[in-house]
Image (tube, rainbow, N blue to C red):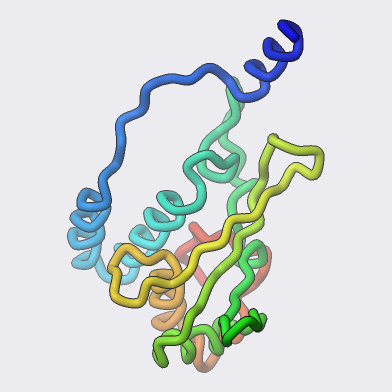
Length: 168
């Protein structure tokens, strides 16, 4: 049992105190970034994705003793959009997600993330849209795609393009 617990600790690492980030701080940062135009919007979305999805993920932090690898970053192809209609969860394009959000429908995005916690080396996390919240990651991603032409050019962003890229 001791050896098993010792191995478990090595896998998860020791617990260390971390400073909490209150949602009010996130909202303040979003307000400040709002004035920076499109780059501010891109940074806001990166902040929301990091806060809601990636705080414990290899895409957000470098591994122990490793350099950060941008090839491991979250891409548009790692995201799946859905609209929930009753008990049915319908896969939709970004354009359909934008329309559903405008109609106030229940929407969600699922991200496939890198993870060292299992043999598949991936995990998934799903976030539902909170329509009246400035801190909604789903809303932020849709808001980011609209100025770069979701209606006319990008029914689906390039799957291999990193979310953190601001050049299209």
